[in-house]
Image (cartoon, rainbow, N blue to C red; front, side, top):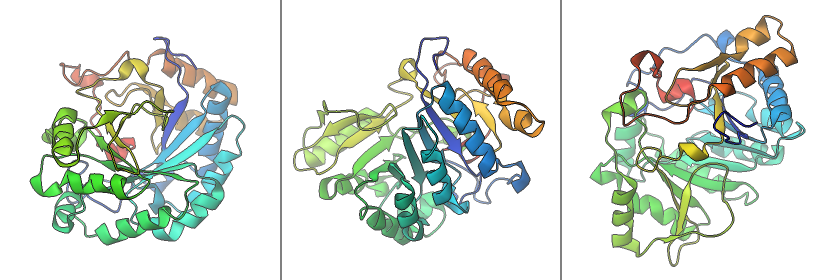
Length: 326
């Protein structure tokens, strides 16, 4: 699919649930957010139908997200069926890793291509401060289990918050000691993320270079479907990456659209603009009608975000990331 700005759209992020077993301070309040009734969440066959139609339109890569996707039963069978759709080249999943140890084998056997595990710190007290839960041990066990399946590419996602005890260098050491890519993701001013400044890419690079030496831009083959820019460090098994949507705006290269757990198709993270695919599906809409609705939404995909400018209030997304899809 080609949007109105000439960008090739081939990547679909699907939130399979709005539920999560963490309460991260930059994502939701301590008491959590109001969960929608499960009947409002897209069912497996509805997800598969949308993906089949998306594949016919040119989508080749799918990322499964949440909330926390592994709290939804049946993720391995869903991955297996997605992999069988003609045109779908890659299926990956983002998780906090807490439930991964018991599910990793099933996901690998189903053909999962890649795994992103969110890990903001290796400091136990800092983890409890950020996530408001005490699951660092379970997350690390999930990472260890994932490393048993080298056919599934493994990346660690870390959001720098500017908290000294977060110890970003300690997280980066995972890329030194293991064939894991550690990516630092700039704070997005969405929902509760608006309350945090975070750290810029330049600040993190300075911190890492003080400890490990020069970061050299990676010039090899592409390592994923998204906008991450990777660096190598001498003696490291894996790479260090940066996804910096604010300080290094990459909207001109955007290749993605998002489907929320309730079936709303979003074409840009910042804005509410999109189309309700669940309504079309559940009122008997045909595949051709769904294709038309998807293409209508794509025709309105914004040129880029305006997080550093004053965007129209009524057009700006008010939901938090767990409700949109991380």
